[in-house]
Length: 470
Image (cartoon, rainbow, N blue to C red; front, side, top):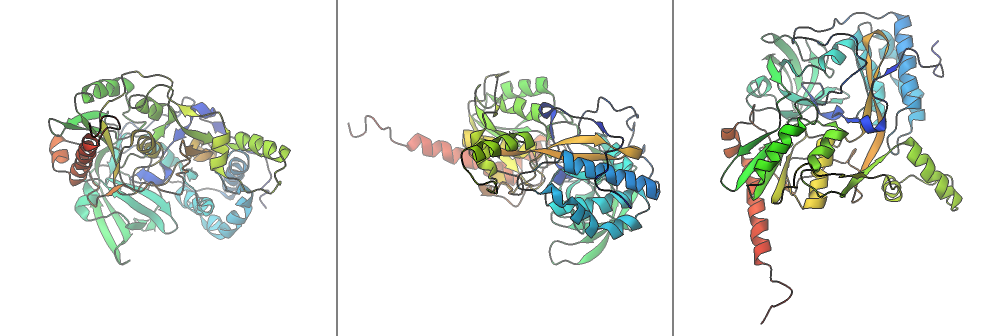
């Protein structure tokens, strides 16, 4: 019998400092895996050199499963944090899915069964990754079909489809649920494989719930393109950011933003950007917001303990319900812009979002709407904003553990509450490589530029407070 209170076995923390946190788009993983890949300095096993270097999906002994469950339990009880989530209920969630965990024999089956129990918490950024999945997440180039997806009870739900990639050509759409991959329950990472090979998917359609078999040929997918500026017209340009991790280059971005200053209108494309590191999203915002600007607050266990202790000292009842917004208001530890590597962009800004926009990209979008009056254009975001750490487990498994929640400077908690667009656009896809011709014909980009022109025109027509009627 497994003892839930046993010590955590064999854990190597890959990222321990809060300042080295990652907002990794758990709910917006690309081809079932993360856009945001953490650097792993303690990693000793070689990274895959090609999309074909995939870890085997071996079987697990009962003893191996018990040790892994002990480790997961330790991480949930000792490290995991999200505002309002009672992690003490983990044994109940585990018991609910114990039968499927016991039946699991392969590594993939086991991680899927454990993740169904973890999903009971109803939050992002908490996953157990099989060795195969953990290895594949660090590949910037891989054989995939071109989707972002999120874990759901039935399998994985498509949150966005990349234009002109295999999934797009096969007719997959946002909202479709992939229940099986090659006859096995779908999990994040299970679609990837060798370039040029076919993968058979069981798909429940979003429009009507009809279940179909879909065969898709994998192509090489690249998630590591650097930031780039695309001219749309003489007055407008687009800055495309695929990720705040893979391909993110602060020096390249500084050059891009200097060039962007020549355009009065700037559209920032964060569609299907699943997040990345705290350091990188702050670096990007430092090119858009003045030095000293406060952006938001990360809330962790220690901060909440100090807040509740102070509240009790002031006479508040011990069972007072925690309000993360009030904790954020109370805390002096803000995410702020400490320097400007380039002069902040002076023109008007719009931000493109969709259901594949998650985590760090949601923080950026919210900050620009709150602090630069930037309209959000497209579709709703993923609503997945928790800082997480990656932890090495036994037998090549890894676990993503949420350690901090986030509240924007104006009091918005995004986790579980996706950002809604100011301008809804059904055409939320983007070109497969962000080429200029894709953006000049992109209806969502045009809607953003039209909104900026309208705002500029309205501002120009406003009468001044002094001098009217003279």
